[in-house]
Amino acid sequence: MLEVSGICKSYGKHRILNGVSFSAGPGQCVGIVGTNGCGKTTLLSILAGALRADSGSIRINGTEIRGRSGAAADLTAYVPQENPLIGELSVKDNLLLWHRGSRKEMERDLTEGCSSVLGIGPMLKKRVDTLSGGMKKRLSIACALSGRAPVLIMDEPGAALDLECKRDIQAYLKAYTADGGTVILTSHEMEELALCTSMYVLKDGVLTKTRNSLSAEELIRQFQ
Amino acid sequence: MKIRLFYLKLELKRALKCLPLMAAGAAVLMFFMGAAALLAGKALYGGQAAGRITVGVALPENDILAKQVTSMLSSLESVKSICDLSYMSREECLEGMENGELLAALLVPEGFVQDIMSGVNTPVSVLLPENAGVESRIFKELADAGAQTLSAAQAGIYAGDEVLDQFHCSEARAQLERDLNRLYLEYSLPRGELFRKTAVSASGDVKPVVFYAISLFILALMLSAIPVSGFLQPLDPVLRRQLLLAGVGPVSMILSRILGLALLYMILLLSASSAAVLTGAIPFSSALPAALLLLSVSAASLAVCAFQAAGNRMGGVLFLFLGATALHFFSGGILPLVFLPSAFQKAAPFLPPYIFIETVKMAVTAHWEPWIFAALPAVFLAGTFISLAFEVKRP
Image (cartoon, rainbow over all chains, first blue to last red):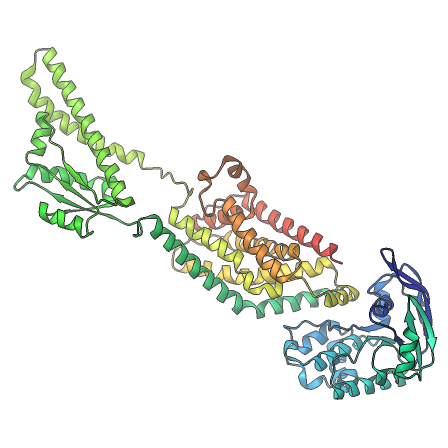
């Protein structure tokens, strides 16, 4: 269970987040939408422990993670917009770097787990530099999920991906929530937002709950 | 701890993938720097690289005494070390000068030695080319020095003659002159050897050519980090953030990068030093591996420091090139320190390239001084702390 309350964040005098609060239970997928630069990435970075909030509280299964990046790393899997991969190394080396378990567990993961679903197995020996954008995104997700965290945080997962890759990732997200995982994602794509069980609009630093069956036009009106 | 060690292992692996690029870069650098040094040498020495001075000597026919004197001159160490004297006719001398085969010519007149003995002093004609290069100018100085030596010898003999006249023993003049000539030569020639026992050079304990080879090697070593700039550039912010989240802190990031580059440097240094030891160019000493290891990590920390200070790949390349070249100059690697202002001379021993050059000089001479094993770790620590400071300050 993820419980976020009263998160505030400012850059200098500019307040980006102003008392953001929401909660998400196991099996839920929360979508956060908003215009470019409204603070979505800042909010996700705070949830993942990569950025420190000025005030507020973030609890996962009762554990406070605000200001504790180690605990946040254990309890969340964060897939940023850009891929945090080491290009000169192989896919396997990148997976090993982020994998929290043993080598055996990683190999099992490759045959049965998320890496298998994401189609990582056949490209293990390839250099990351030589992969397509979609392949890199799959690998990023596989790396993030290698820690088996209960909360998956994804920043625009489908950006710049081809249709097949988007479909595979959406299928994986469905499977992840079906297994009791919690997904928090930001997106500008209606297909991805359709996966969400609850939807929030971030505007002027304030997060407001909205219906999760809104059309694109209705969402745009909410941004304005 | 596990992830930090694994990250270090991955960084070493990533560094090794850059080895062919670095080796190729170092070879290209050495080639271009060597070519530049050769061209500079040619430009400085009037179109010819400094070499031996070929001198034509035209002696009067059947003058055995003159030939003996010139043979004796050519056997002097100072002349022998840089001059090749060839005996030929006057016409051949002039022709050799005209077509550039000779850098100087000596035309010895008839009765040259007898005239010296009698005090008439018929001069030897010294011919030099119109646009005299450095070799010809050196020979002119040698000839002048020789003439002054002869004058001093003659002055001694004439002084002896005058003493004999004052004591009314003029009949002993001939005997005195013969004895003085013999004694003078016996004493004066070996004495010159005494002054040559200690070689005095602007380049210190090694010959200038060895010094410049070492200097070139150190500069190439520093600049060979440029081809692996992809490895040395600061980490991508997203990757860095994820590493921080996973528990890989700035210290691990910087140390891993320094050790990665140090591994490449160590491979290059071991290859070069092994080749030098096997060919007998440098002697093996037990301190050599430790010194090479310290040199590798120190040089690597400086290269990483340049990229950290610049904050990006292109800036790092520029910073490393300009910084390494400027520090090399101020350390006396391009012009020997004695030619630099005294302020630079005092500061140089604290500059990394000076310490690196001294390390290689000690490796070449196998004469190790303890201070080098304190100076190299100091450079490593300074480079690491500065790099770390920039890493911590990154947003």
